[in-house]
Length: 447
Image 1: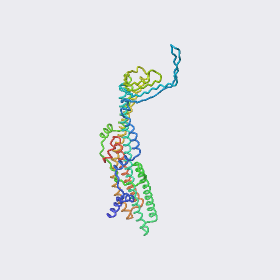
Image 2: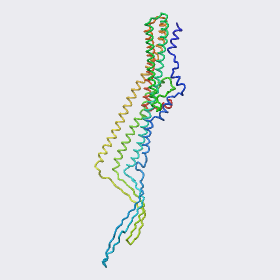
Image 3: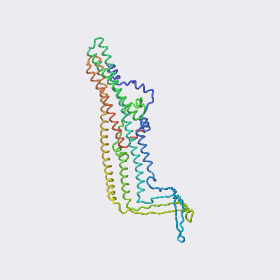
Image 4: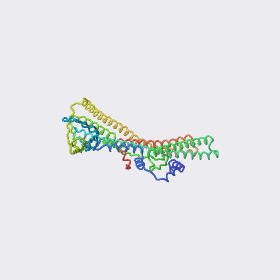
């Protein structure tokens, strides 16, 4: 009796190599870190958002803010043909000069510089720097969301592989039972109903296995798409065979990290600084402005009829313009709107902070609850394995009906499914907590 029970238990818990694993053995395995690194390099969404970030980086220059002077080089040449007629006062004789040509050449270099405008130019530069930081934060958000997506699909792929193996073992159990019933039926020990029932169970489990193959293929295609592989159906041989759950997360540490490094919160802080800078720009109109103009030019005049045939002028010119805007009719309105924008940005940040805290607590409660569920499901699985081993022995002795053995088999499969679901759900809560707390990139380092 003990030998039969042991054989049944080994059949339940065995994990033979399946066809897909044999195929994968020909290829190098890829870890989660490999997938993340490859995706960050190749994914089109990441490359596009980095392209947009580069625009913000290029814009954040002193010249674009107006801190540097402008220097213009200009040259012009003009002339006119004219006919001149003059009459002498003394003699009354009229003299006519036809097609006389006078020409003027101007060449100059001019420098214009806003020396002071109530700190508006410096505020412009600060805003451009803030917009650069905003581009970096938006890129970081996209990268973190992408990394979380890769992790989710990576472990979903593992989940589907484990489920496929569970269904394969279940199919093998039904195959073994069908084989035994078939032998017993041929010698008259079992009835035709027992034989047909065993065949129905085996066919149903085989169909379930084939459906799971489709689910695994779908997950593989999704993972290939995330990694921007040209061949979205390419085989992926992942290194991990289990869903490893981190049971050591600490709530206080996660919340502190959320306040310090969450991308959305940092972006809200950045937006608040941008609108504050906009308010300073409006306030800068209460100050005078100072413009400096410096130039060096050369002018040549050519005269055909005048006493002077040619005149050349060259030299340096300089000037300072000081002004003050007394009234423009809309300054007060712009100040009020800027103050409202600051208040709105602060309220938006506080609302985001509250939302993040709620999300963190929801995921935290789910994470802790799933850890407890996982522990219970693992204990239950041990019982289910022992129960099936005993049921299989009693069935082989002819003291248990096929329906009762099927119930034990279903209980075993359900316990395996429950463990798998609890592991995956716990992992997804873990990933969500790491994303909210700004720690999701730690997966790239293998933490």
